[in-house]
Image 1 (cartoon, one colour):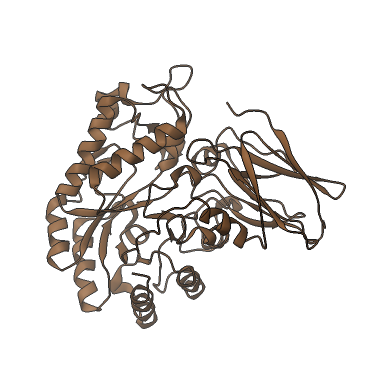
Image 2 (image 1 turned 60 degrees about the vertical axis):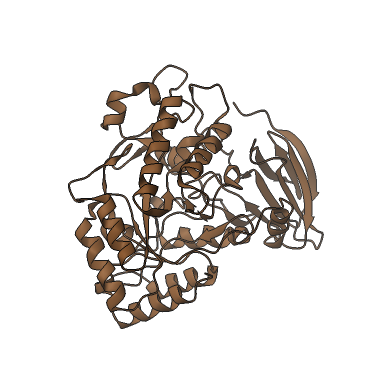
Length: 437
């Protein structure tokens, strides 16, 4: 359980000019700068609070809260102030700020350290540089099946787009198969009826001079999967002994794989070694928040330790040469583990998110949080702003493309390539060709 909040600082502010940056818990949690008069984005229902925010760390009304990082520009010309976890790979306290009579009162429920800076964007970048991380490897360019086909993707869809890349002369390094090839979450090595051979499609991709990539959600388990039926002892429990609830998605409840259980860890190792042996060397691992949920595990370790050990297990299985992209991941606990990281909620063919919840898919929330986390790019990892969608049916596609391009991060296309018009082909070619490779 979180500790009680203790005072950290009292800072006079210009209420009309001050700004606060909240760092959200995971990839999809809203992150960015607000005026003191703004109402920060919060979950609009209990399910999204679990799946997209930090469960158990709700925020009082009228309070700003950063998960492990909060920045204040007092707005009066005095230095920017930043508070951050002393060791974010071990403990990530919530840091709160509330204003009373022109003074910002800052408190935290765990150990933090304070830094000063010149502005609200450069201060976290300067803090990141104190972590002394190695520069991340440049990202390959990617085509991803998700935003055109979603879970209905077929092997034939992959072949069609693979041919189109050659026809349209698109500089795609990696062809990444997203959700839909597997029979169920957790049963990663069992194919859905829409795919014939996972190794066969990897060979076809490589035969055309491109790299094969694949998606998994390694810490999630479908209650209807063979894994859940055959190995319930591999699942995280809550204090009552029931399965730890990881929220609802795809229309059903989600369970959590306990990677501290030796047999579950061996299974996950087998999954990723098999995929690597089949020719996949680009791995998007998604819905990673589940691995950092509190619960009763086989080993008595805290949730962040369990999460990091699970990612380290995956890295060991795929090898240092493979490229690892995180998504839906707790941000600060992921430091030092990934080549690239999704730094925003999902984009979408539309601008506004459902229920105006800025953790949900939409171009507006993806831009808001993507801009708010731009400081992470090249310092913690390569930022993934999410995929370019350039087909005519996409709302405000020109504005979304401009955002993706401006980030300078991972460049990925996610259209049925033969559906692109002249603008779409030219834009896709330019963004992929201009990526930092």
